[in-house]
Amino acid sequence: MAEAALQRAWKHRGPLAVALWPLSLLYGLLAGTRRWLYRARILRSERLPVPVIVVGNVIAGGAGKTPVTQAVVRHLQSRGWQPGIVSRGYGRRTTDCREVLVDSTAAEVGDEPALLARSTGVPVFVAARRADAGRALLARHPGTDVIVCDDGLQHGALARDVEICVFNDDGIGNGWLLPAGPLREPWPRKVDLVLHAGTRPPGGAAPGFALRRVLAPWALRADGTQVPLQALQQAPGWHAVAAIARPQDFFAMLRAQGVPLAQTEALPDHYDFDSWIRNQDGRHGLIFTEKDAVKLWPRHPDALAVPLQLELDPAFWPALDRRLATAGAPRPAAA
Image (cartoon, rainbow, N blue to C red):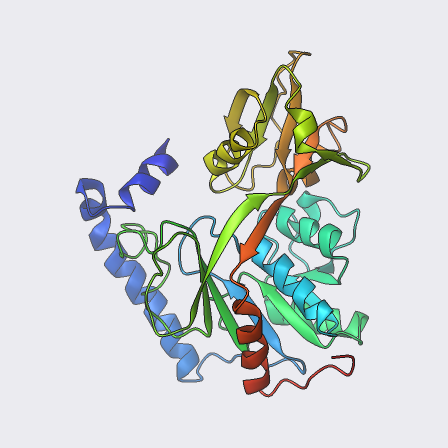
């Protein structure tokens, strides 16, 4: 409930946001000092021997970074690159630098890296310092010629060649820093490319491109087989569960596809499901997001997962290719 109240407060400069505004000044001072230390080279950024693309955001909560990372990786593969992915591995119970394998659990590597490894098939490494993950990835997979960092826009320890900033349809909200607003750092700031949901770009000098999150036209079984969403319309009702930043969006998209929902259950983003108990009503099947499947399929292999996909402005891809070329990234031999 407190999280929901904050989400509402971040859309307007109302009483709660105003009450939290003094704390946002302290947050801004600390964040600004850290950025200055990197600009002054007192804190050092490590540059990897291959180009690095960072997909991140400046707002707290879900903006769609992981689906964008998936889409960027697939585009790079289509252009002849051999990408790898690095991530902090938010929510994992381990602290080391490690490779994410297809059978890695969310507790070991984090739910989003586990999803990325399974859905893209490219090497994925997690570490608290993304540069450590990048070095380990390149040592284990020396054919990798570009690194995509899932999240990390504020992680100055890793030098990058391209920054992609992703916004959901709330944009910059009330424009204030945390905790009075949703911003992790002041906006506008210098980035290379902006992807935004909704019809209103967030502003700034970087080229902006529209994105829209949609459901895949099918659900996945635990064995990887697909079930058309149309086939789910015949059920008496589904128990829909979502532990993502904007769970109501997922439920609304299911309903828009005609999937009857008998019960919806919104849980905190990255929820571990350790204490979660499934509704025992045998009439209603269980359905959840693909990110949650990493944690729920081992417990409920009969359930279905529906992937989220992105529709991006087609002009984004040549803009990304140009930015890579401008950054001096060599074209892959197969391109």
